[in-house]
Amino acid sequence: MQRALRSPKDNAPVAPEMKVCGVNACLALAARRPDDVRRVYVHPSRLPAFGAFLKRCAERRIAYHVVEDDELERITQSVHHEGICFIARERPLVGLQGALQRRDPTRPRCLLYLGGVGNPHNLGAIVRVCAHFDVDAVFAGGLESHASPAMLRTAEGGAEFVDVVPVADGPNPLVAARRAGFRLIATAARAKRSLYSAPLPPRSIIMLGAEADGLAPALLNMADETVQIPGTGALDSLNVACAAAVVLGEFWRCHRAPAAE
Image (cartoon, rainbow, N blue to C red; front, side):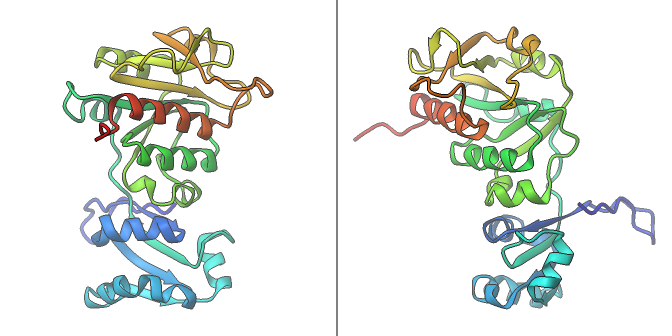
């Protein structure tokens, strides 16, 4: 990720920049924040998909370069660029309190807390699931940055709809969430209550831990409710992104899905 915090001319703040690669991630950025794109590197094979946006870039004197794979690999430092890379301003970082207080507090709302989930591909897959189910913020315990190229690409455009909020390890973010009116819902393979036995609370923080160790015991003990995802029991647990999809899908079914006609 590239950061430029001050303009050399007048010492004024300059928005940090980041690399975004992957077709869907770049298309989402172009649709939602076109004015934040600063430069574009595109493989010839991607010109049809991005032609309209590149025309806009030319009209606004935003540089774009048609390059081959080896140049894209050098720029992105990855072979998974999918033939497109934007250099763009970062989305503004949203803090814990800002994310908790967003939206009408009387409406159903579900957010996600991740404890020790640092793998960018898992995080990107989770952000993609969150965007699908209208979960607008993910609190990432111990994460140092709210975005990385690998996470953005894996999220397939979902990161334009979901704020990843780095928060401190430990109980403080969850205490703040409870004070803001959310119930803390943890998942555990050996919990007595099934996810489907009763509707999830209308304002929920779903707590998920890393696949190897799960949630830290101190955090698990903070939960207002602990649920398990029913299955065959052949395996101890699901991939964390799959677990997120199951739980968030159930919240959507209970509180947000349109009524059948």
